[in-house]
Image (cartoon, rainbow, N blue to C red; front, side):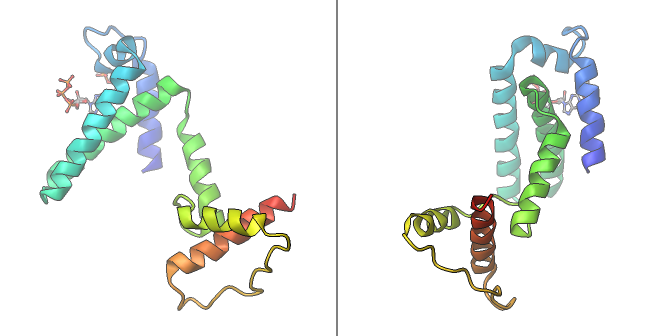
Length: 150
Ligand SMILES: N=c1c2ncn([C@@H]3O[C@H](COP(=O)(O)OP(=O)(O)OP(=O)(O)O)[C@@H](O)[C@H]3O)c2ncn1[C@@H]1O[C@H](COP(=O)(O)O)[C@@H](O)[C@H]1O
């Protein structure tokens, strides 16, 4: 998928300077980031509505529109696809799966950091039987405390 997105991103960059009368991408660049953001939000809502209504094919089509509008906004914001892949890899290394740090883990790590003697983290992580949320939280805390040691 990342190859397709990277090809699309390059095509969007190339289309930026085309004639807005014939290129939708050039027209989006001409109208600026607020129009791009509006289109991206509209596409996201269309994906949500089609998914809730079980329209799988429509979800596929609208998701392609969503990704197109996302790459346009990335280009306008100076974000490259590889910047996003790097962030996803960082999260995968930290949490084992590419997702944001659970809010509760952030709160817990702040609470632990504020106590005088930080509680020692378990030497070994709980067996895989623990719920993913628990495993992620401990891994996340370990990740944050490791960062703090630098
Ligand atoms: N991948 C896409 C792409 N995906 C979706 N779209 C456009 O995004 C629209 C989907 O958004 P909407 O549902 O809002 O469509 P719409 O309601 O007709 O649009 P508006 O009335 O809101 O303007 C589609 O109708 C397409 O016109 C795309 N337009 C261009 N590309 C690629 O972008 C590159 C540059 O193309 P041009 O913009 O044509 O130069 C090329 O590689 C294209 O393949």
